[in-house]
Structures are given as structure tokens and as C-alpha cells.
Image (cartoon, rainbow, N blue to C red; front, side):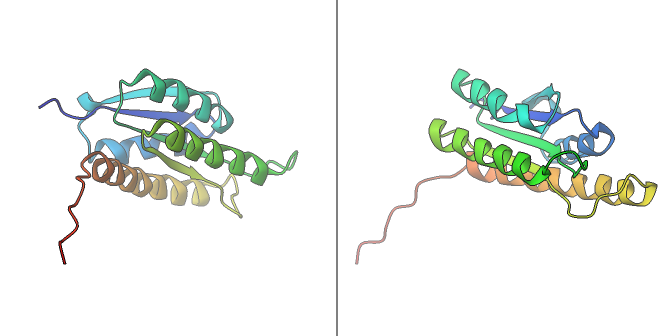
Length: 146
């Protein structure tokens, strides 16, 4: 049996933090089963996820981004559009699409906050990998006859 294949899409904004999610993902799933894709930012993830899901090469797709309030626009509309888009891709294609897209309320460009979020992204990457494996390995259960 061929081992499952996974795509991991990561946004380049805050790459020093977001890339840690890939580290966590690869601590659970062997690197030879994962193809990594970079996109400029979170907003570009759903379109690439859709393209990859429709190709049929991957059993699950994980996407990672950090969407912060930059003071220019409401970051919550970007985060909502991204998560909604990723969910729609999964529902439309039946390929599991997992989000490691975080939108902190109080992110500051300090060494302390960056360290906290780097660690958190490792954990979230591991959780996404475990969820991807669980979804790929789902077996239909037979209802017990009463």
C-alpha cells in the first residue's frame, strides 16, 4: 500500500514563526510524504489548496499562516476569508484541508511574543499532522444491528 501524501502550504509573512508549524508537522509525518509550497500571504492559501486538491495528488492539505493586525485594515476579515476558503475547498473536493492559521488578538513584534508564537506553531503543526493522519485513515464503521 502506498503511504499517504500530504501538501503543506505556508505563508511567507512572518516566516520565522509560520515555518515552525512545518517543523511540528514533519515531527509527526515523514518528510518524504510531504510536499511544501510557499505563498506570499494567508490570502493566497485557499486558491492553491483548491488547485492541489483538484489535482488529486494529496490525501490531505495543511495550511499555515499568522494573520496579525497591522493597523491598516481589519485583519479579522482576512482571517475569516482564509478559514472560510480553506473549509470550502475541503467540503467541495472531499480532500481534508487543515488550518494552522492563527489570528492573535495581541501580537507585538517583540522577541517575547515571537518566541511564544514560534513554540505555539510547532504544537499546532503537530496537531495538524495528527488530524491529517486521522482523517486519511478513517474507516467507515458498520452500525450494529439491533
